[in-house]
Length: 116
Image 1 (spheres, rainbow, N blue to C red):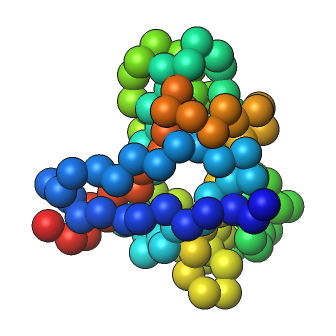
Image 2 (image 1 turned 180 degrees about the vertical axis):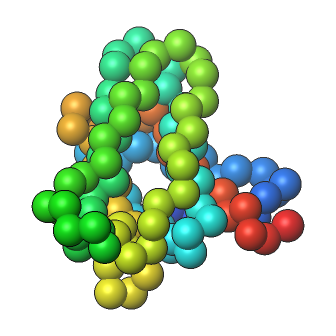
Image 3 (image 1 turned 90 degrees about the horizontal axis):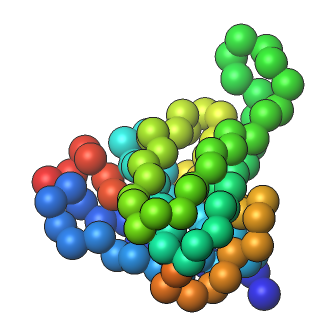
């Protein structure tokens, strides 16, 4: 299967939670979008934002990885730079470097803080 696209919601609106898909997700990133991860399945998961091109400072391509520890808590990842993390149609991509259960035990949502 291919990655699935996440629905981006506006700030203040109810988040659109999606079960974490083993093949990853994409979402429209305008530089003001924040990724939320809700992990309640009892396992440690690692989320990776896929860098599309090197930054202006010339470092090599480096995916941004963050742990999503268990605990029924929602982890928040900062907005991603559109020049480094967006593909040619304006989407950022995430994968899981640990097995995503594709159940409600690990969910993701994206919020755009430039829209109210």
